Length: 122
Image 1 (spheres, rainbow, N blue to C red):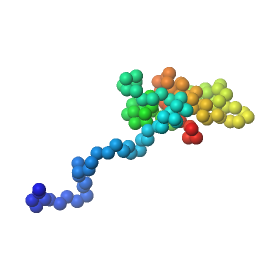
Image 2: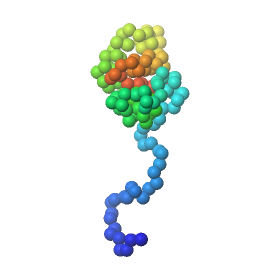
Image 3: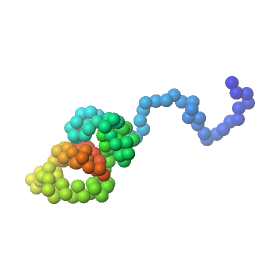
Image 4: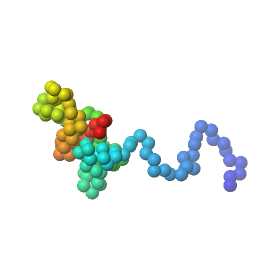
């Protein structure tokens, strides 16, 4: 019990709250989405501990982090796949995104600098 405590305004003592398992801002990827997108599950024993965005991958539950196209290697891969892979560029129907994501994620599993992608309609 505190006697004559000093009132501090504008500050909240975070130690007075119970810990929670909630995640703020990073959602785990459901296993059905992970499987349909061809992504491997996060397993710390099989992952390079120095890989970029390891924390994000752990929170997402995937072997590699899911990120937008952002590295030079990803820009080059996208350009090459648009030129050469029919699931990325068919004149009759346009990209087949569900298949394209699987193709992309196969590259992500083999190459550094390439990260997982997910199709929003998986």
